[in-house]
Length: 83
Image 1: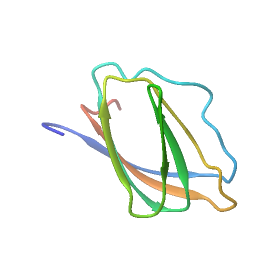
Image 2: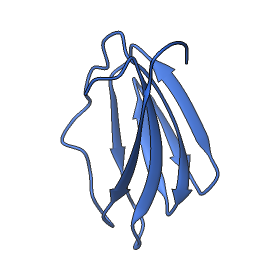
Image 3: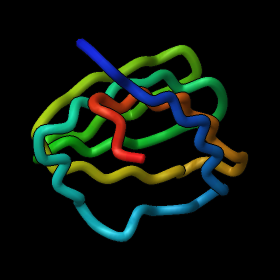
Image 4: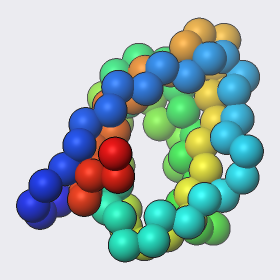
């Protein structure tokens, strides 16, 4: 990630699912899963993340879901900021 960015702490409830794949336009996303489990779909690829796993992608639609029985905590980094 280059230039300005924002960091977001996100806590996702057990069994929560994002509405749909969302385009990320010219935005770069990165992050690390702090606790719980998260399934991250980027384009047509699916990644199952556990604590300590990180990710980075840009310009692709994405979606997430928490398949676990406990909350998932993610620190997202977004550049440029989309306040």
